[in-house]
Length: 377
Image (tube, rainbow, N blue to C red; front, side, top):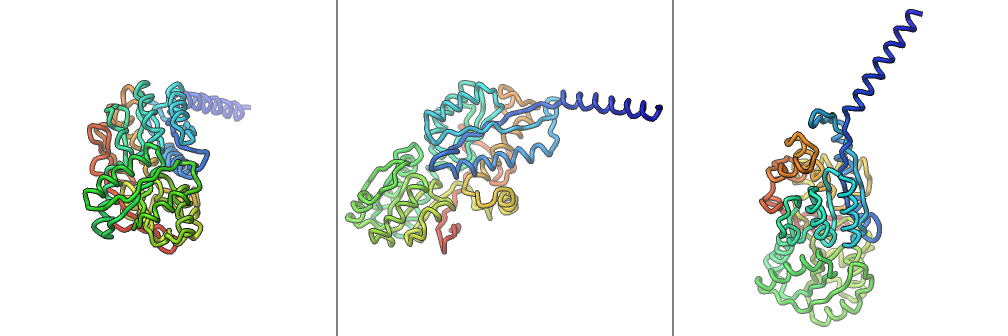
């Protein structure tokens, strides 16, 4: 009887301790937005994986902020790469009072969503949207941890002119904020380098047939095509270039086409050998923690890596780092701390310019050899 009483008392003490522990734990939600449906879902899944991986690791660290043990949770939303849906889910995250947001993927969704986040006072960090217009309003809630299109478009134009000595290039864009923006920067820089823009064509981010556009470009004798858009269209374009006997024509593009998925979409097209694309940031091999991080990612999400997950992973840690330095998970308190970040991430040491752009952004050019994506620099 005495032993049973001791066990009962011990159980009560344990239960009380457990209740106290539960009461002292605060759940903090971090939003993530990207296209999780449609033709860009593979990018969205990769981005979301980066956030989930970061949150799982953060939850092993027994982080205490404001005297409470913090449990982080993801609030994941699908914007389907659609600006209207992007603003709707941004408002939904505001209403849910998430502590911060990682996203969005596309410039066309991120730019309108940034106003929603600013109005409700929630910071967001994108590791994927690259249109320079994102930071022009000067919102104190908007941050980017990847090079913008000014760097990507210009870098590709310099390579086309200086390394490849190309003279005639056609430009196609998909009319999205991203595609149009990066194409415009490439075009303007290419002209200053003496390249002739022999044709300008437009498509959409849902198109699949490019035969008429490519036939027109072929008649102009272009050495290369710059495509401002995403890999679903670029991959189909490469197949159709082969059909038209244009496999000797190079294709340039920004990070939207610079994926592993384009290899599958191109389905063995010889034109893939002529692709030169650019990403913001260093190659995985040159990132401070790139190779080790990629090994962890592949073990957890085999075959799902695309481009941006190292950045969404770092973006999550950047938000939490600011919370820790402010000793608060309240956006009204910790947002100001983002401005003086100096976080040593997987991708780089993340510090911001006054407008929320990444300081000293790197870019990397890639080509495709033997069906694999290979860094040029």
